[in-house]
Picture (cartoon, rainbow, N blue to C red):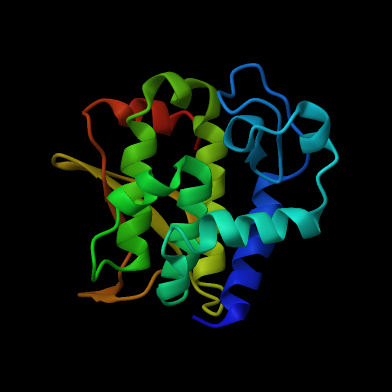
Length: 193
């Protein structure tokens, strides 16, 4: 895939990951630009003083290529790369099926994140914001807005406006459809919207 895909993906990543954080409930420990002490083994001061240039090379070598994002089309490569950074390379790979669209992949990611009940309590709001931002970047050429629709059994819920996803449905453009498992997780999601 073109080098510009990594450049755009890294730019997105830096925006959503932000600067230095040392949250007591984060199992990764001190973090900057999404690079954690637990992942690298670097000490707190090294993480705190990390530069964007060093982070960029580190992400290319340790996540972009190993996740397989370098072999996927835009914006699927962005979605895979971001999930690998956020939840680990193996987790990102386990949720990808060949032929899957970027939107289907994001739905699989959301299902996974909502299953992490203990972490969801602390980080769910931020994870949902990150996914909303990801979807906006994935569809940045389309000026129309739609909704994320979450389906659980025979119920469905509409959430936060995001740029329209690809596809056609009778009556208009398709919306992202996410099936949430296990039952009851919608109560956790609903509090954020």
